[in-house]
Image 1 (cartoon, rainbow, N blue to C red):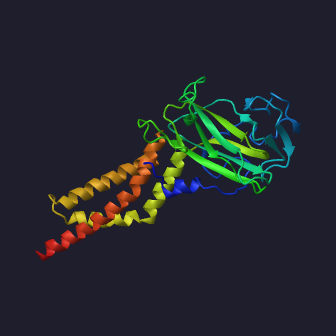
Image 2: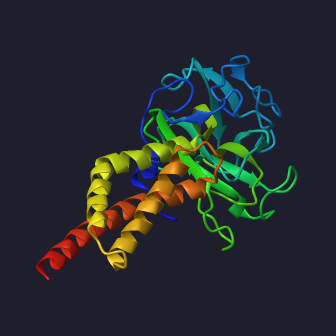
Image 3: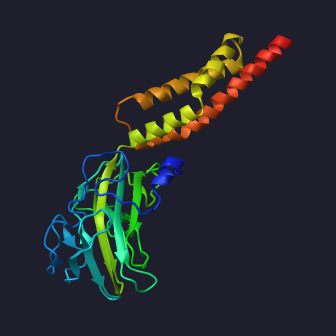
Length: 310
C-alpha cells in the first residue's frame, strides 16, 4: 500500500497554480490555517516577540526579523510575510496546534519566494506532529517534523508547493514517510521557517484542508470501471456462466469475482465513513479485479468451446 495510484501521485506534484481559497480538490470545511495569506494585521515590521494574527509563536525567539509586506503570491491577496535571517540566526512562524484525524487525508500547501542570492536557501515549509497537546511525537526527535518543501530555490519567482498527507499504512513498523500521517498523531503545528541562511524569503497563501478522500476514490474507481467497459465484461461472463457446468472451477471463480466486484461497488457508492487506507486498498484492488474478470471471461469462452468440441 506504500505506492499510490496515478491519481494520488498527480496530486503530489509541485506546480504553479493560481487560486485564492482551496486547492482543486474535494475538501471538507475551511482552511485550518488562520490568516495563511497574511492579510490580517498592519503592514510593516512585526515587533520582536510578536507574530501576525492567527499565528502562535515566533520560531526562534523574536528577533524582529519578521515583516508583513506588500506584494502577495498570485491570487493570494495583497500581502505576504517576509523573513530575514543570517548564517548564525533564524526566524519563522509556528502555527497553533490543530486537531486532526489520523484516519483521513489532508493537503498542506503554500507559496514561497526568495530574493536572489546563494544557490541554496534555508526557507522551509512543513509541520510537526503531536500525540498530545503538550508532547510531540518522539519528543526531542527530528522524526516529529516533516516538510512540504525545504531549502527552496532562489530564482526570485513565486512558486507553489503542495503535499497530500495520507494515513500511515503500516503503523506498527515504527516509521512513517514524510507524506504520511502517523497513526498516533492527534495534532499538528504548521512551521514556516527561514533557518540559518543569509537571505530574505517570503511565504503566502499557506493552507491546510481536510480532503474528502472518499470522493477522490469513488471518482477513480468508477472511472476505471467505465474505461474497462465493465458492464459488457459482466454480460459476457453471465453468458459464459449460463452454459458452464455447475462444478466448473472457472465458473466458481467467475462467481466469486463478480460478487467481489459488486461488494466493491457498494462500498464506493455507500455513505459510510471509512479509513482512508480502506479506500486506497479498494483503489489498488480495482484494476487487479478488472484484469481478473477480463481473464475469467475468456476462460469461460475457452471452456465452452472445449465442451462443444468434446
